[in-house]
Length: 359
Length: 235
Image 1 (cartoon, rainbow over the protein chains, first blue to last red):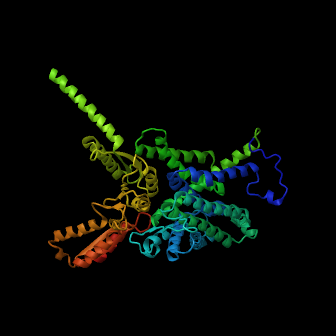
Image 2: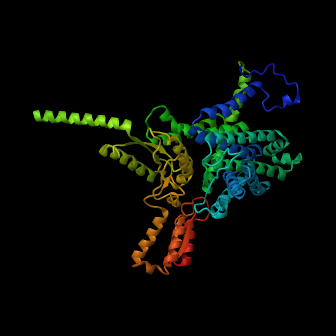
Image 3: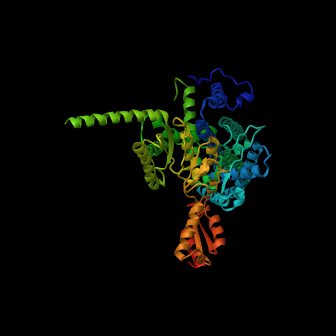
């Protein structure tokens, strides 16, 4: 009923091809942006911004990157953590070598470095597919983390092997990285970065590049026969996906933790991002955000819930309850809708548009 | 009988008075100590007794001495599962609790300590990393809010060498001896190397280093590598 789009006529090609063709969606988006840009920074506490919103946004970006590769181009990857590490360490090397370079350019440069590494590790994808490709990307995961751990050049010969994000300003003296930055400034910076890259990704998957990816995903032989070049299509997917993961890694190190060691991007990080896109929805931009919200926010909510409800439960019981409820919910949602939250939302929307006679 | 009643009444008065005293003391002087514990996760077997001991000790200090110089200590636990992300989340959750905010953080994990140093310095909350964390944080001019007493990775390394020297019958006997460090190949595993190298220059022993990679980082089983390296130096 609220989603009835009767009377919304499209009178131009531009209107017909809009990202959000239904007016209700556009209103919802405007409200969402208003909340994200004005309400949250003005009302949320430091705890909320620093430990809930910023990691959620960073993980959304990483999930978006992996979704481009796995969800749209159909290339299973377990190297997300390594590509994030590439971005983090490249950003660190860039900003310590060129302290005057604007932090936005540093992050984009870090993304480009990660993209280059992604292309190298994407080359085997031309010959191997499916689970075998997953194992090949696993090699990237192990090799890169080992490399960052092994060669002190990457950490500027820091004795401890940890990189600390130096404070960098975006314009004037508005510092957005490191721990001296004001939480809401950091949040707005990360939010803007993620939103711009999301908009780019959305348009990319609607363009001919995105259609090529989906053709390769659905049936690579058929795609090749209709004239899609396998090598360039797959490598483009690897490059762009790694770019997104690299920027996410740089944001993680510079805006979230402030200091990071290579082990923070180990194989568990890759699995975490992979679970996000499986639960959120493969091949969906919105799904990346929903999956990140589920995996990042739900455990924090579950561990805070007993205190919010005023129950005094011992912390180990809270931790174990959190594991049990979280695991049960993953199984529940995968049984209810194997295609993830994005598909669940899509079905709900379809039914609401036909209200009161959905079928 | 009368005496018993009297003494009971006296006891009651004392108890009530001390109760009043205690409650007024809580209102006036109370320090909040957040406890970052790891009661779940892969390291829980060592984390549970540690966490129990900590909270028991604060209870003891409050019950026996009425706190420290009349200042009672309130605590709240937060489970980090020895995971750096959760440790940071716990820090942010607990740092503003209590009437005065957190007085000190003891992360009980070198990884979490690394992640918290910058934040805590910014928030002006002391971090007490006893025997772990960054040894170079002992220099208060560089890290004004990090304290490493009573021991550090460096002091522990020099204690090892001193002990070996005593066993051998004097530090001069160390000359030409072979000493090997088998260490976790990570930021904190590498901490003692510099100390051992400096002491090697002083006492003239030969230092061999055997990194053991973190599980999953290298495909070789560490045992076979160690055996091979050990055969090379002859131990």
